[in-house]
Image 1 (tube, rainbow, N blue to C red):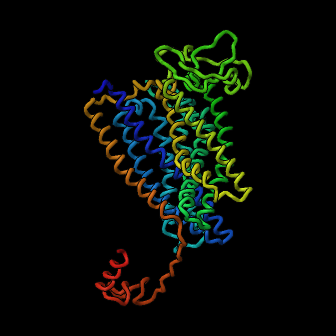
Image 2 (image 1 turned 90 degrees about the vertical axis):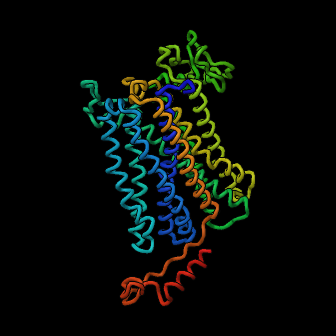
Image 3 (image 1 turned 180 degrees about the vertical axis):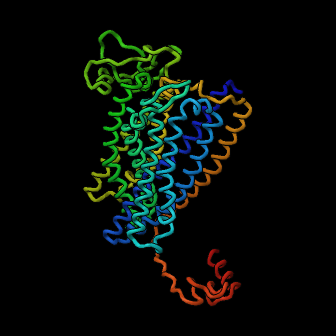
Length: 480
């Protein structure tokens, strides 16, 4: 079918579903922590702006959380339908890690999500804040287990192979494998940045349209403080992650840099732009900066690192793709740093909320945190190829014995249903954003007693003094 193999379709289907899925947990992680900060500020200062922002973003968080859960369940089934040989080979590691995620993180989030969503007027302030805090902690615990599993596939440790299957023998080494700490911090910061830019872009949209109030200004201010602080930290973490990848996955680094071979004792230049040609084994139209490749990746002026020609052709990642996804991630990261510094300059001049070029730039950068996150994820996953478990099992050996027609049909159905279902969900989130925050009205607690809302004496007494027909008519008029 169009020259595609079963392996190509299986990879496309999983890549498509995970690309949709990863966007929702990223916002969930960042938004849960943002909500916890907002409620803490409300409890500490009793300023209504924090309460109003909490209830505004809580609705968006709830919709996003639901879409993240639905899109994540689908991927788990694909391990059995499309990647059964991988599940048979490495399920002894990945199965327990994903189970721990459900038992520790998902149960924690699900258990307190109801209190967080519906308990503002039903439980005490301290208990409600505790529920919000535990949901935020649950999202970070979930990211920890998921990244432990994925990082183990990148840098496997603590295992033995018995009868053709991986058996974990040292669980601490399995969980805390060499790439795990770097990838956990890198992903968490990416989630915070993506959420901050989404919040900032939402505020900029309202300010550009003249919807200027205390809540909108506070949204922009808090988001830009986050971008200002976290974006430079993310660059430092990314550098450390790159050094770790060079040590454990040198072929991935060579592909990211479009570096094919070393020449004598010459330093490795940094290729800013070019076109890595996998057939010609060279990077065409390269624009280079001498020595900078060595300086960034080895922290020395002249030291070299392996090029793609040091690896067998069948062991090389596709440099044409990840060369550009990596540069997209880094380029957007640099723009985030510049945007944060620009916001600091305007803040000191007390023009943060009035400078329209800055607001337009912030609006454009609103979705770029998610774009950068997706580009980084593609770099990581495509850069691991041709291995599904690095150095142990090739992706071609991990697929299920599934026929081409079944895979083609399921992939088509996934594309159509995902764009429809999640397209509607994303449109609804954007609709909520367009409404903007409004003043939250505290509900009066029911007075109780015979014939009252809390303890009705008759089946229809809870509707009040009006007849059911009158009440229904009034409610219908209000909704219209």
